Length: 191
Ligand SMILES: Cc1cc2nc3c(=O)[nH]c(=O)nc-3n(C[C@H](O)[C@H](O)[C@H](O)COP(=O)(O)O)c2cc1C
View 1 (tube, protein in one colour):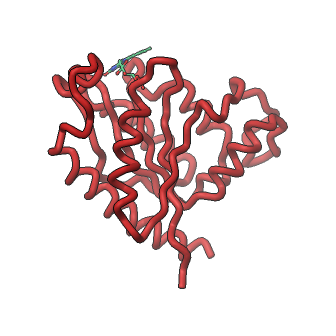
View 2 (cartoon, helix red, strand yellow):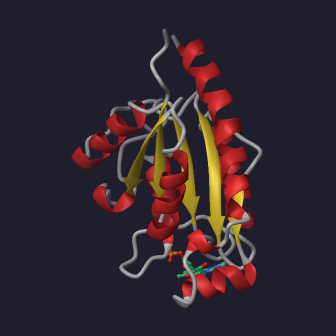
View 3 (spheres, helix red, strand yellow):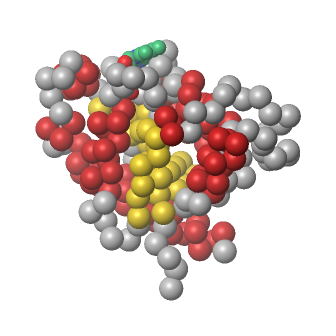
């Protein structure tokens, strides 16, 4: 029997006062109710890679930076990803783009799902991110979760916690359902 797919929940911002970890913890709590996949939080703070300074993408030349090698190993050990992303100037945070660029083969033929937060729920960042994921030969799932508008501002100002927005729960569950199908199918296909 196939082992359970392992999914990394990626916290895509690193600034000291970030909101990303609260939202990623919420995703992790909902995801962990499932018994058909395993989940772990991946914090980009734990992989402080320099701005990309290798001879080429690791699609062509192995990376020299030791932290990048650790990152590639971790990404390679997983069967799918949930990106919990903010929107910085209508796109993804630079630290996330750098981390995406620091691997290639490890991302390929695996599904990616998206949880965004911001004034429009990170929608613009997620659209950019889906495009990047396709270039990395990943399979983006349709259902995303968007924490937006007044609810996002209430969270940002510390007036509300993400758990209070119960309408997000079924969206997260739908995201996980779609991710599960792709994670299982692609894990089988990669054998
Ligand atoms: C450099 C920068 C650019 C931002 N640009 C956007 C933006 O384009 N759209 C948006 O909705 N929020 C934007 N914001 C506000 C973020 O949504 C908000 O600060 C959010 O908490 C950032 O995620 P983090 O707390 O995990 O770092 C921006 C914030 C920063 C620091």
